[in-house]
Image (cartoon, rainbow, N blue to C red; front, top):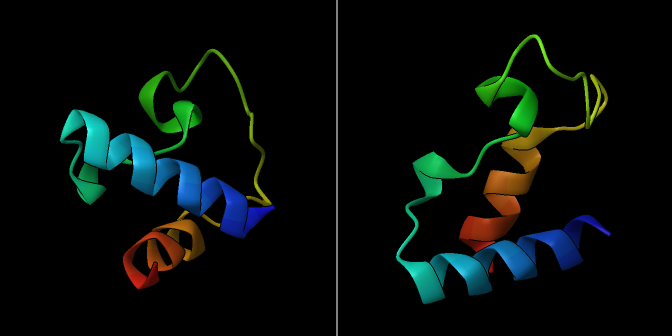
Length: 53
């Protein structure tokens, strides 16, 4: 699932000129609103997978 998410992120980044630094979890954008995707989601791992792709 993480590899699939990384592939989707790469495609969207390419289509919309989104830099890797802008790839984040929405809990980091709106702290009080949600805990999703949860404390177990490894954002650093996702970014590594995106770069490796």
